[in-house]
Length: 386
Image 1: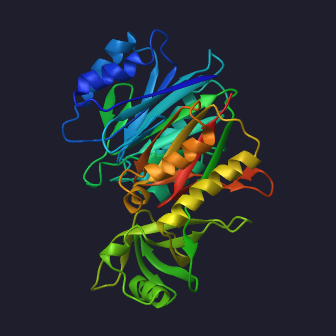
Image 2 (image 1 turned 60 degrees about the vertical axis):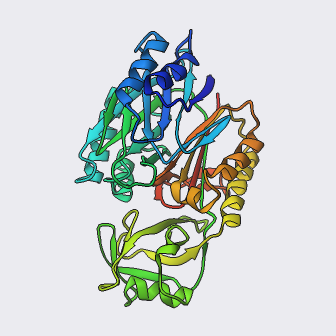
C-alpha cells in the first residue's frame, strides 16, 4: 500500500485542481480522496477539469466532500482543498455508490446506497468511508440505514459549508451533488484502526427522552428539554452555549461510551430543542460540557488508544466536528498538530471539519469495535495501514 497527500490554497479553481492532480503524477492513484472548503468563488467544474488535465486520465475514483476548512499533512486552513492518493497495486477492489434525496429519507437513501455499493463490489467489504449532505441529512437515521446492510465498522462525516448551514456538496468522479449520500467500499487487505472521542464530560442527573420528533426533542423525564438542561447547569441555555453544552446519549455498550448531540436552535415558547441529529424516544441522556483543554485531551487519548493497539499507520483520515474548530483557536490547528506530532511527518494526513461525524467506539477490553454511531462535537480518526 502507498499513500500520498497534497493540498492547494490557490484561489483559481482550475489551477488548484491542476496543482492537486500534479502531485499524483506520473502514476495516478487508484483512489483520490478530496476534501475542500466551499467559498463562494470555488468553481468545482473548473477544479475537476484542472484535476483531470493534470492527472492525464479519468481512470480512478475521486471521492470526497466539502467541509468547514481542510486538514493536510503540512497545512490546516479555512480555505483550500486537500487530497489523499491511495495505491494498492491491484490488491484491493473498490466500489462507489451515490444516492439522492437523503434529506427526505435519510435511512432509506443510506440503505439503497449501501446496497448499490455492495452489489458493485467483487468480494466482501473490508473498509468503508461515507459522506453525506450535512445540511439536509439526519445523521442518526443515515447511520441506522447503513448498519442494516454493512457488517463492518465504517467511518465518515457530513459535509459542511464554511459555517453558513445553507448547502454542502458531495464530490464523486467529477460530479458535484447536493442532498445525497455517497459510499466508498474496499475489498481486500486494508488494515485500519478507528477511534472516536469527544472530551465531553457528563454532569448532573440522567434523564429519559419521552417525546421527540425527528431532530426535535420535546420532553425529557417529565420536563421540557430547556427546563431539564437548566436544572443541570443552573442557568438557561443560551446562544453562547452552542457547541459547549451537549446531550450525552448512552450508546449501550459494555464500556459506557456515549455519543453527543449538540443543539442547533431552541424554541423559548415551547422550550423544545432541535439538535444536529435525532435521539430516539426511550434513550437515556445526560447534560454534558467540555472546554478547549478537554477537547485536546480527548485527541491525545484517542492516539494513545491507537498506540496501545499496536497498529502501524501508513495514512490518517481526520474528521472533526466544526464546532470543535470554533471552540478552539481559529482553524482548530491545535487538535491536528497533536495528531501530527504523534504520527510523525512521514504519515500522510487529510481531513475536514464536519457537520457531523460517523464512527465506532474502540472497545479496549476486547480490542474490537462497537457498531458505528452518528456523533456531534466529536473527533474520528481512521488510520490506514498495509
